[in-house]
Image (cartoon, rainbow, N blue to C red; front, side, top):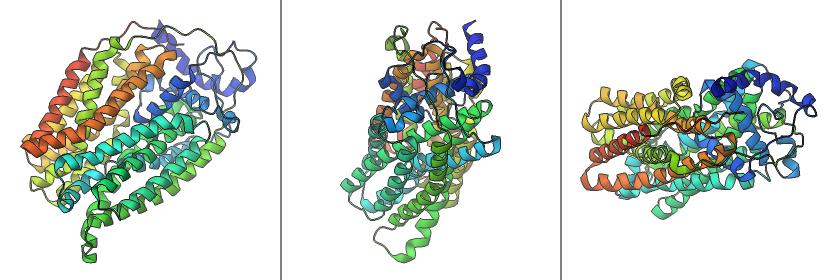
Amino acid sequence: MARSHATGDASRMAFVVSRSLYNTARHGAMRTLNERSQCTVIAQSIDTNNDMTTGFARRVIAWTYVLSGVTASNPRQASRATPPASEHADAAHATGSPGRGPTLWLAVSLSMGSAIALGLARFSYALLLPPMKSDLGWSFAQAGAMNTANALGYLLGALAFPRLSRRWSAGTLFVGGCMATAMLMAITGVLSDTGALLVQRVATGIASAFIFVSGGVLAARLATSRPRDAGLVLGLYYGGTGWGIVASALLVPVSLTSFTVVHRAHDWQMAWFALAVACVALSLVAGRAARRIDRQHVIHTGTGDATAAAPRATPMLRYAFALAGYGLFGVGYIGYMTFIIALLRNGGMSEGVVTGFYLLLGVATIVSARIWSKLLDRMRGGQALALLNALLALATLMPAIVAHPVVAFASGVLFGATFLSAVASTTAFVRHNLPAAHWGRGISAFTIVFAFGQIVGPTVIGLVSDGVGLERGLIYSACLLAAGAVLAVLQTSLPQTPIR
């Protein structure tokens, strides 16, 4: 009954949104979440890159947008705040909503921000790791530390976002993050000291977090204007990561080969300049979309009582298996994304094969948005995360035991089509099992274990690779992912709490 009642809420969301301004006085008192929890959800909503679950996406979109509005406690931001999206509360109303085509185009344009934040700023490093390691005399542990630094910066940026969003709008933070990322990528092109590069990677991670977090907020706003296409809007935005991977796969090899005639001391620096130019170009597209959404999709608020009692928080021990499985996912997946290119090149594969592999991985990431939506909507326990972890373990193991281009391509397609959906599965778990008032607390817990996994993973797998080889390092990554699958499958669904 609770499930069918929640589904009914989804179908009524479009009507509630369109009439909310006129029904403010008619509805009962508003119920709000704790501000800190709300801000936390915004930060994580951004790291849950692919929540494409169609069964509950429509009613969750307005709620996610509510969280963005809460951060606008400053009077200058008050016009963008919104009340919770529940059956007994006022819903957000987006003004000046464009038609379906313009809305989807805005989502695609905005997705260039996620292409910058993850595809170019983080995952492009896998292509540059081999030449940088060779030129600078790094060990694999030192090379992995660069992605550890980036993950640390991302965590710091996500934690800082709620406070900053009280002063500046999501659009302003988005554009600022794009500009800062482009500048920091260019700065990498003049650095060669390991310590300086580590600092740069931390700073880039912080700027990337501003893009990804604020972009998720803007995508949620945009989705409120097209409730029927809410899942597609989010899928287009988060799928932009794949475009960044594809751009990296094309730009880095060309830069490394084309600029050898310059005879620079560090030829890999030219690739960072090329990536910076790509960041600037994509920033122009994404920034324009962000400003338009910030201007057109203004959410108006009413006033209400925020003192309604919330259900008692679910102890985290009750979903400890899911948390542990997700933490191991963070360690295992980032090991693959950091060292897979080095493994393929050490295996004697040509530049064309490596480029083709990364292109396929990026394309698979782009089209993965809808593949797992029904699974995430149907499975209430840890089964979805368990299945995705198991598939990722297989994808990671394949190139480590068989050095063949066909196997590498199959691994890239499977990995690209799966890894972002593992992130989304934890958000699905929280929304299925916890009361809405405690979604922020649950998502925050998953954010923390994931962040620590990403921070630990590159260095640990790098140390293993230094000792026993890259193949063994990826085998260890696969084992961690498999262990995460075992832990996740032990996670049962929690007693259902009706979602209003």
